[in-house]
Image (cartoon, rainbow, N blue to C red; front, side, top):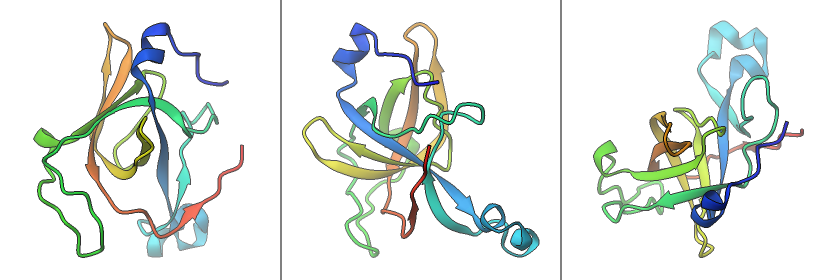
Amino acid sequence: MPLPSLTLREKILYKDTATAFTPVNASSANPALNMIAGNNIVTWAVAHVSDTDSTLLQNFPCNLHLTPNFDLIRSPAGLDKQVNIDTANILTCQRQVNLQAAMLIYATTRYGDSYWFKVQGEAEKEVLVPCCAVYLVPDAEPQILQETSQ
């Protein structure tokens, strides 16, 4: 089941796009390693909307608010001025998009700039204006990305 179409308000607001990635650990890639390396992340896969909906969270419309308090990570040594939920970047999207802690987000702004982020904390669901909001902190691109087929 695909995501519902955007409302007029969402079409005006959500001009950025994002893809959500979830970690694939060694135990799910190879169940025999469950006791040995259960928490080792071996790759990252494009996330599904939910366990019951296999729609990929890929290039979904969103609204990205970047906070100038961050120096974005540019190398493994990094420039990391502030990683704090009080000053974090915020991404809002349709409420049906179920973003979770531990996800990596690849966001492309309406101007064509692209960034990698880590979700900080759980998503907040707004009721009056149906949307999902998450705090993001800058992160580096993962070493291994897995292609996910639908």
